[in-house]
Length: 393
Image (cartoon, rainbow, N blue to C red; front, side, top):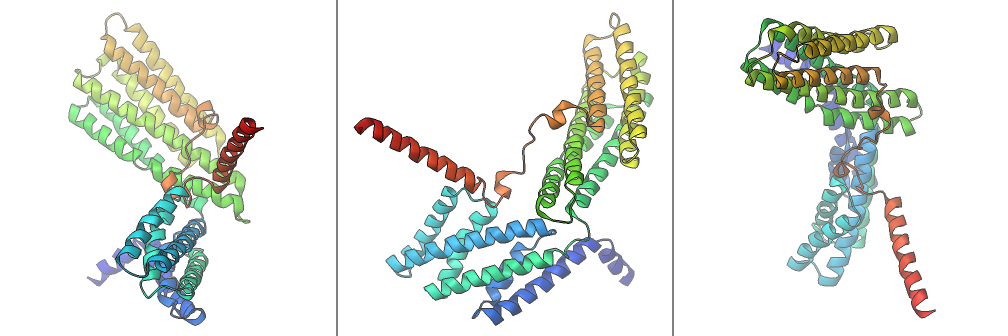
């Protein structure tokens, strides 16, 4: 039993490290909060626990969200209680006004939640200017301690974590293509094709996490002095490339499933399809294993393109005798394999010339940049003044 218990924690070293650091950070925040602010330990510990993340970059964002939420919430609470006194109306209006202010400022999910919560925490012990100042001070302490301790929360940098995620999902994609190749060569059933399609869909679920980690790596490199910007940008492009690759793998799995539903693949093209899928699988594996060896990766992707071209020739030769739908599906797989090769070589314009969506707005502290908001308001005011000036002058 002790061996099992030990293994349970040993296999989750990263998680164990995170919870130990979070626990220590919360305890330190409580102690420092009580020393510097009157009865500020609990609020400091709460804010610290909510703000600490697996990286310094994320914790800075979360801490800023806590501070913004606390400042707005405390202000709204003070105004409401000073007008209506503490009671049913003050509490209700505080929550409503906090939601309205958060919406007007386009705050992200974290800060939007913090605004009403902080306001209610401030109201709880009896509202006053001193209480609000104490709560804000405790929030600053908790956020600062979370930022400091988050540096020790994870042994790897954001770039390293992004590379780990990309490598892991790439290996799974290569393995899935290899299974498809073996299945096509041996003759597969609709059930097997359904399993491939299900696994391909599961791989796609890793895309949001990879994108978020790649964005974090790039953002971290912009302001952290020891981070290398070129490496972070390269990892960001790799994240986009693996996203495009996974889309093609899922499309291939769907094509094979549709072929199985329609009666299977013609015997004359089974070999070429299996070879092309195997070449695509090897190209992805080579990209993982020989990241620094450009020649090896290029050779593997060229082999995948040649296998796809051979498949296309075979399909065109059988065009007169074969089913037209099967030929179309086969040619679509040729295009998919070529896109996989282009993505691995990172020479496709779709990777760099097309703007890739950043992280979701709800994940940001402010969904719309304060600069953009200010510029938009200034334009509206200027436009309104121009209309008034033209009308009367």
